[in-house]
Amino acid sequence: MVAVAFTVMCLIFGTTFLAIKIGVEAGMPPFLSAGLRFIIAGALMFTWMWIKGKVNLSLLWRKEMLLTGAGLTFGTFATLYWAEQYVSSGVGAILSATGPLMIMVMQTALLCQKTSARMIAGCLIGFAGVILVVLPGVSIGGSSLWLWGCIAVLVGEVCYSAGALYSKKVINQFKEANPVAINAVQMMYGGVLLSALSAVTESWNTTGLDWMPAVSSLIYLTVIGSMVGHSLFYWIMSRTNPLFPATWLYISPPIAVGLGAVLYNEHVSWITWLGVALIVSGLLAMNEKVMNLLKRGKRTTSTSLGQTSKSMVK
Image (cartoon, rainbow, N blue to C red; front, top):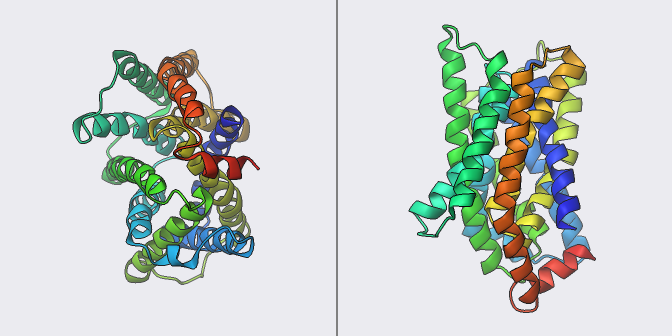
C-alpha cells in the first residue's frame, strides 16, 4: 500500500509545477490562485470527513493546525507560486528537490537524530542528479527576477521542511484524528493566509485573464494536486517518517523534463538522463533505512498509529 501510494503521489506532484505555471501565465494572481486552491480543497475534504463522522469540529481551532498550515502550505506555496512568474516549471521542480536534504539537515542539527552515512550519500547523489537534470536548460543570464525566483523557492523549501517535521509531531499528538482531516485543516489555514497576503499585495482585476487555462489549472491543482496528492503525503508520513514521503521531490524533476519534451518539444540530452539515473540511485540508497522503519512499524502497529493506519487502508 505504501509503495502504490508513493508512486501515485510522485506522479501527481510531478505535474503540479506545470499546472501552476499554466495558471500563472494565464493571468491568475499567484497568491490568490494558491489561496483558493487550498481553501476549496481543505473545505471539501474536511466536510467529507465530518459527514462520515471521522473528524471533530474542535480540530479547526487548534493552534497546531495553524502552525502546520503556515509551514507546509503558506510558506511553501506562496514562494513557489510567486517564483513561477519568473522561472520555468522545471526549474521550480529542481529547486524544490532540496527539501529532503533540508529535512535531513534539520533532523540532524535541530532534533539531534543520528543519520547514517548511507542516508547522507543517498541525498547527495540524488541532489547531484537533480543538478544534472536542470543543467542543460538553465541559463542564469542577467535577470535579477530569475535569481530572486530561485531564492524564493529555496526559502519555501525551508518552510516546507520545518512544516514536514512539525506535522509528524502533530500526527503523533492527535493520534485519534485521521491524517486526512489534519491535512484538510492545515490546508484551510494555509489557504486563508495566502488569501490574506493576496488581499494586501495583489490586484484582483480579471481584465486580461485567460479564463480557460486559469480555471482548468485551479481545478486540477485543487482536486488532484491538493485533495488527492497531499492526502497521500499525510497517509505515507503516518506510516513511515518525515523524510521518506518528501523524497517525491527527487522524482518530480524527471517528470517535469518529460512533460517539457512531450508538450513543448524540449531537447533532452544524455546529461539529463544521467541525472535521472543518479536521482533514482540516490532514492534507492535512502530506502534501506526506510524499509527498516517500515518493518519496525509493522511490529508496533497496535500501539502508536495503528488505528489511524488501519482506518486509512479501509
